[in-house]
Image 1: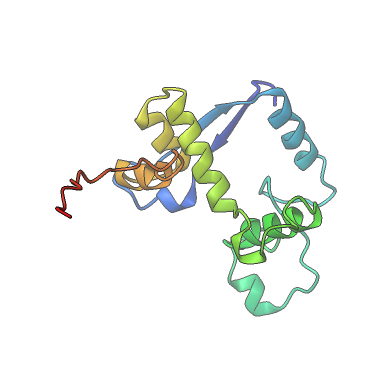
Image 2: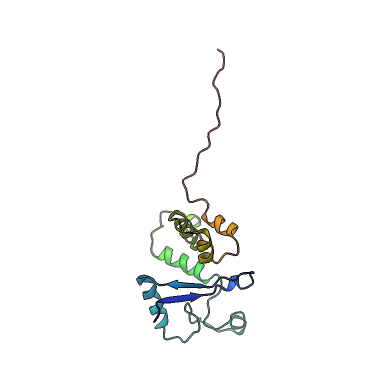
Amino acid sequence: MEKNTLTVSPGKTQGYDNPVHLKITMGAMLREVVGECLRSPLASPYLIHYKPKARRREQIDAKDHWTSVTPDYLTREFSKARDAAHAYDHVPAGERPTFHEIRALGAWLYEQQNFPQEYIQALMGHADEKMTKHYQEGHDEKKIEYVEVGAELAF
């Protein structure tokens, strides 16, 4: 907090030839959220953490720390918060935006603002540019390709 930075080493990149390590300068909103996480009464080595309702041995053994979140935790909690906000009640449940779709939109927005591809790739924690490009695809309006034909029938 003193240096107004947040350091992140995404676990999924540790097996890469060049693991990703980020040093993020926090904006005001991110700093506020990080401060709230740090004020948690629950002692945890993780910024994002929670107190499980039950602590079964197999659940504890499956995680690095009993307060750590599972890989699908943010996805599930995002869906719950999205639905609790009632912003997409008019959209069928299976068509509502997901955590990963919002993340992919973020990657595309960085691309639209001319951030270097290497920067976006690191921010996304991807091993190669191919995966980042995959996330960035599909946000432009569909480009229509016309097939030229002639209407020269004789009547």
